[in-house]
Image (cartoon, rainbow, N blue to C red):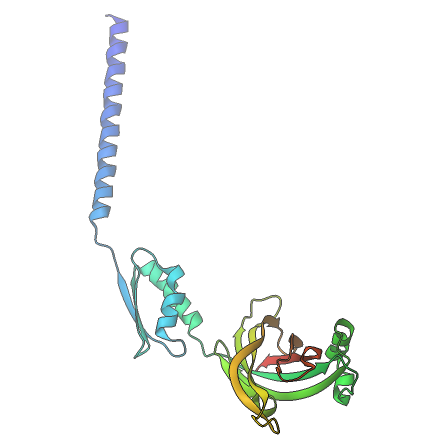
Length: 261
């Protein structure tokens, strides 16, 4: 018997068998992939009645969670959010909704508006020992400090609050707080805007002075991180009094403290 011929036939048989097995495996894998592609996608739907956040606002906040199967619709009239998605991603979206749609926190702020002058003059006794005012005296050229107005404001997390402020309500203050437990610098992110909306004017006869409405002028627009219970200087601005000869010598200092309640 020709041994070489037997070995050659044997190797040929093994090679042919291997090719058949590989072809069958490839065909099975292809058939499985095609079957998976033909399987209908499982999509679930949830209808959520929101308690605290507006549906349209929350719809925008959920955009980072959206995938190819995500469908979100918002009804602002009923404050209802309808979400459909594959089960896995839908659960992530529902968890995000539960985390965001929470009762907003209440905050209380104490605001002081101080008028200062570069000219020599008296300083209010309660301000002489104020640690923040002492620091400002080192940094600024102002020599005298008088408390123009002070008030306490109740605010709600992530909502805008506006109050009239100062003698003759010549200013208004806009607060936009956002409570963040994760911020290492402070748990209240706060935007504060101080605007002047009235100006002291002279009558046509120049014998009387009065406060007249003007287009609001933004004097301070500041963002700060405030720890609950802490007190900070929001900003310093020149006082806009067009009819006053010493307008450039006077300034406004806004100081605020806040805490969650």
